[in-house]
Image 1 (cartoon, rainbow, N blue to C red):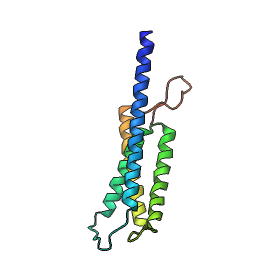
Image 2: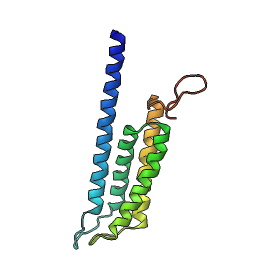
Image 3: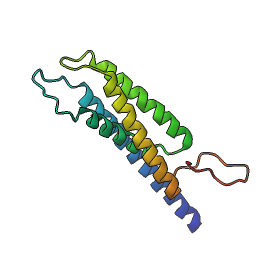
Image 4: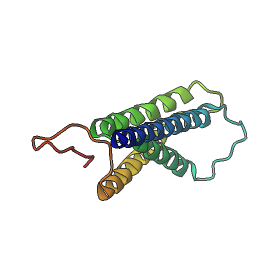
Length: 145
């Protein structure tokens, strides 16, 4: 009886942590959308760091998304979803005053996604963490590899 309560408490804690991580990921998506779609300034001067900002923002999205969704299937869906998200925001910028979407910006978005996802995949593999996806033929659980 005590063991069952203990296990249920652990599962409840994991669910709460997943909810917080997913909420943080959604917040990060919103912040990137806001920064991408806010109207530009006519006198805005580019300092050469624009592409690095794209890389950093999308790497942060990839890291937070990978923490929130850690199974193998979710990993690949997240990768595809973030690439499409970056393309959609670049396209949407063409309709915003003093903003332009560009292929180099989209390339920086994809680079950031790849950097963040590859880094997190390596870290999770090294630490052997990640939500189990399905049982293998031996009966143990597969982890993100």
